[in-house]
Amino acid sequence: MDLTPLYISLRASVYATVFAFICGTLAAWAVIHIQGKLRAVADGVFTLPLVLPPTVLGFFLLCIFGTRSLVGQVLLKAGIRIVFDWKGTVAASSVVAFPLVYRTVRAAFEQIDESILNAAQTLGISGWKIFTRILIPSARPGITAGTILAFTRALGEFGATLMLAGDIPGKTETIPIAIWSAAYGGDMNRALVWVIIIVAISFATITAMNLFGQGAKRK
Amino acid sequence: MKKFIFVVSLLLAASFLSAGTKKSKTAGSSSIVISAAASLTNAMNEIIVLYKKADPSLTVTPVYGASGTLRGQIEQGAPADIFFSAAESHMKKLSDEGFVADGTICRLLKNEVVLIVPKGAENTVSSFDSLISDSIKQIAIGEPASVPAGAYAKETLATLGMWDTLSAAGKLVYAKDVRQVLTYVEQGEVQAGLVYSTDAAVSNKVSVVCNAPADSHKPVIYPVAILKTAADNAEAKAFYTFLCSKDALAVFAKYGFLTVQ
Image (cartoon, rainbow over all chains, first blue to last red):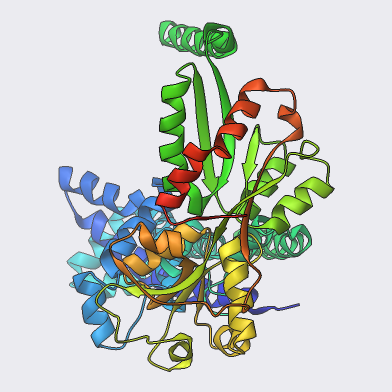
């Protein structure tokens, strides 16, 4: 059996998780510093990929990265192809994974005792240092949970990936696309094998997160 | 809040009831569903309009898609009355499984496979041999298992000895039906694609490079048949007869389809 969908899926998910981890955490940090109505707007924008249909995200991504769009043309000149390329699987997974990190991390940040942050500020510690030395360590359980959820969501991404990266066996055919393609072509056995594999990976990841979380609490 | 919930439940109940009585409301008119290959889209839409003039009481609902996908839907119990496939293989499989009304399979149309490129990019691909070139990164074809155009494309490329090279290089982008191949090429997302000559003819954004060599693939035959569930459906039979009539064949010919002798 050809295992390339597993490799393609894992590669896309790992890259997407790294992206979602960095951008989601930074976005959460930025949003808790925004005051007033603008905060609600910013939060809405960052949460949108969670609630929009993946086809809408795929549409936007195609508009942005399509070979005839401005960004797409600039990237192509630089030798970077997103549409119908494995980088497209990363882009699509990143966008859907991002809000999961963003929301869990923001919630974790908001639960941190503000007096600690105020104390740090009066002691003259810089904003960046507060972020790296206080916020991040205190919010670690939240960040871990968000990152793991982001990984599993990235692994399961289908709609936007299909629209942006297409179905190229050995190149952009992720596990969900392999399932779709196999079921579509009437090869239910191949579909079933991939269904079992992705259920196993996702279940193992979530269970590991729960066990890990319990262990951390007991300490 | 209680009032709100009450109103919502009332509306929901009403919608269920109306859904249930819908059939009796439209008793005066009837409707049939035809599952047709994606490549038939334009011609079939015109034929349905034409038929509507002859029999305004009948609503013909077309479902377009890859023939393999449509076959799968029919196998799963989709409420289709007529199946119009772009490949004999899918029709044969349905027939073997007992989904087709006996003796209704009619080999109606013929088509040809062509190599297309986006308009204005004619100099990039001059023949099938150009596809091997490193400058060609993406070639769209239908997903071979479900899309007949993809199966014919695979057969052609295999006959030309290029299939293994192209698929190993990850150049082949699979599309869900032949019209998606056309869209990929129109948008310039791929540099070339394999579609039917009739698909290339309905788009002014693509150019035909050449036909697939004769004998490089099985002849492209479109069989049409009434499904077993509609074996006693007079409307389905009437529309099926109309599809094989001179008037309908003239429309198919207008879109470039050839008639099976």
